[in-house]
Length: 159
Image (cartoon, rainbow, N blue to C red; front, side, top):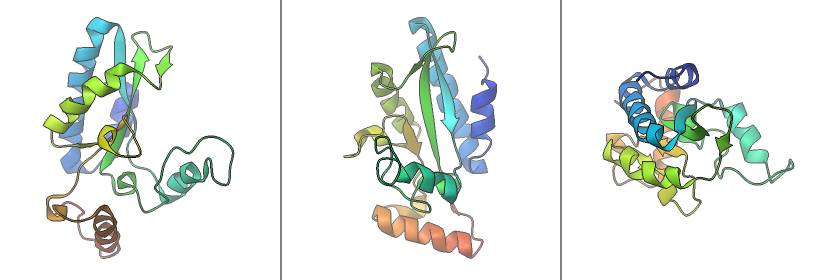
């Protein structure tokens, strides 16, 4: 089984040390999805701060439901350390935004070292992120502040 073009394109935006783990996750998810006549794709990797701010504005200053609690610079997507997946019908014509299969995939992602958004108070079942080892024990706020600092100093976010 191979990665689909969309997943490959989005995974290629992730931190190089995250790519192989994320690709393994997507391929394993696709294998589990196939007998259920489903498919799984990576629909987002890196997001610019502007893209994140546009998502953050939804349900606040623009119409629609709130879809994120993270403004630009406050999301792991902004540091190439997060990916969002989506469940589709096998033929790719139907997107399932809410499907029990997301809950089946959560533990798979966790077994590969990802934090899964399905465990959060603000439930985000399609979201997976890699917490840097140096951030073990840090609050989310402190980790994001350190990520910002590392980026500004051109220090690898996972080093």
